[in-house]
Length: 235
Image 1 (tube, rainbow, N blue to C red):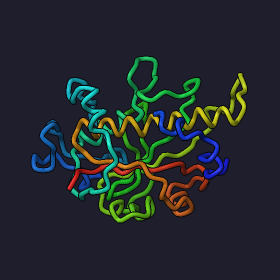
Image 2 (cartoon, helix red, strand yellow):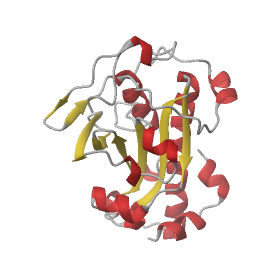
Image 3 (cartoon, rainbow, N blue to C red):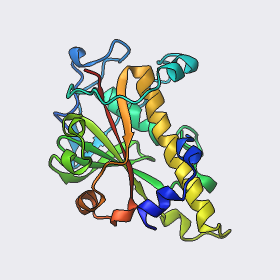
């Protein structure tokens, strides 16, 4: 499926439906709402993430009032708690049956999340709530085309993965399937927006990414690169 065809086929409202040194627990890097975290440690290419604090945050209506796109982002480090919570908020497991914070048609979950940190690119293993190293090195310039992308401590890249749809016992027309995947993507990005609004962080969902370059980094087809989202502290 061609990425541009995929995006053009989606009604705008559907789209809206919605590391070591790179992250630290230093008090001066946290917003006033952020809890004390622990240093990020990587063992054999895996970053173990902290469970989210489900008691924190501002009221939903207040978060909605603060939800916005921010490009005035800094290179200030996030905490491990913030890194853990933004990923869990995006598409983490929130029920004992394995279902997630973002809806997916027939629980097929066709959107994978790759976290681009200054130290490397990691795959978010939702079931284990951990980051698995894909490739070492700073690939932030491959994950976007705007200056703020190159300094932000976290860029999320959303990648299409249709493996769960391959053994579909109840076939769905591709056009309908694609609309549902767009809804899934929109909800994931909005979850990130809502977390950032509550946490006092900045974020922007963006389509400006060189699909050919980043697909080479993570070894997928260019048309699988859907969108990206930058998360950082505000200047």
